[in-house]
Length: 116
Length: 110
Image (cartoon, rainbow over all chains, first blue to last red):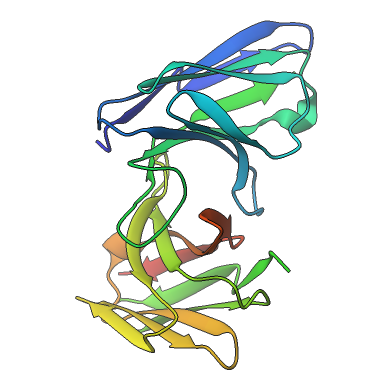
């Protein structure tokens, strides 16, 4: 248990569906992240939020829409996805934005998304 | 320049053997090099990390060796155990952002 909880753990959706992934952290952290993990590829940073404000969007298509209502919750809204978007979506948090010695990123267990 | 190249893609080691995973980078501005361990069905977890002013860091059976001039760093797992079977990711940080390697799937045979 890392203190970062993601739901649902598995999601199958059609290309015309709208669904959301939810992340909650119980660590008192100020920064939250969405990563995409595809088979045999490096983890890709998608979005970064610091104190509820989006600080980074790594050229993610608009069919992925993040929402951060407070420092403990992060959502990823999904709309008209493509089959190539099927992947493991990982939420993470850290005390402060970014990675430095002593500012560890803690990952959730991920949400497996399959787009059919 | 932001890439971190990791090898091998998969590794099979006998119990008690040494597992070695290598990573190489180009960007000399990277200032922090963590390794993450990911078990099936779990998210990655920080295993060990090193800063570029240190050539080696050891924590239990895990050692990072860092060669700044060659822009390479590696993870050594001594006395590898079946419980070490997982995917290992190297990473490098610049401007407070992590760049991950593509991962190495380690299998330790009993």
